Amino acid sequence: MKDALQSELEYHEKLYSGFAQAHFARPAVRALRQHMVGRILRMTGAGARSRVLSLGCGIGDTELLLAPRVAEVVGVDLSPAAVRQARADAGRLGIANAHFEEGTTAEGAYDLVMAIFFLHHLPDQALAELPGRVKGLLAPGGVFYSLDPSSRRLSGVLGKLLVPGLMKRYQTPDERELEPGPTAELFRGAGFDARVSMYDFGSSPLAGLLPGWRAGYRAARAVDDWLLRVPALRRRGSNFEVIARG
Image (cartoon, rainbow, N blue to C red; front, side, top):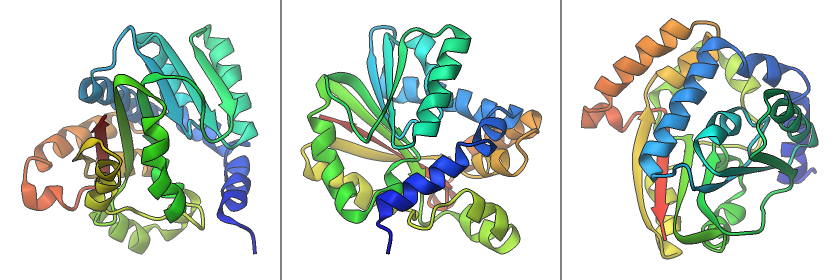
């Protein structure tokens, strides 16, 4: 039986051999990533002097949007195909302060460590150990930011009923949705001041379902911003953030 790491690698090598590059370049997905970058900067306080480490960077589509706003971005990913694409795109765009490496971690001290749709791919033991690893990677005053699917998300229930084939295309056999509270508690146990907030309700799933519809994403994002003000609805949001300060 394959271990989870090997399964993840095989899945992502296939994902990053054509589909992801085309899909992530679509207008709605691009707008989603641009929103993510603005949100990360606002929630973490990262800025022009910040060194950023991205865990599980994929093809670097978020990282390359972030790079002009910070001092340096280092992305690490398990997939050689993803790293090759990220490096090629950085070169094509003339972005010199973004660097991409194969692996699961890095060395150095960073002002921000981020993990976008990464934690939910980790086996339980690796997830439990991650906060301690992150603590060793942060410079004094540094911040950790993650974004992952919530186990309580209404969009996941609807997606499995209405478009199960599409849901499977975006999911590896070993990934799962995470409980927001217990995930933040892992970071508190490692000495972080960690809090949870909900990122969205329907806008990110819409970008995945209709990746060419930029205006639709923006309208859905505006609706999300309203819906997430309602506590009862917020609990059923799609993706949650952990912001942890050492």
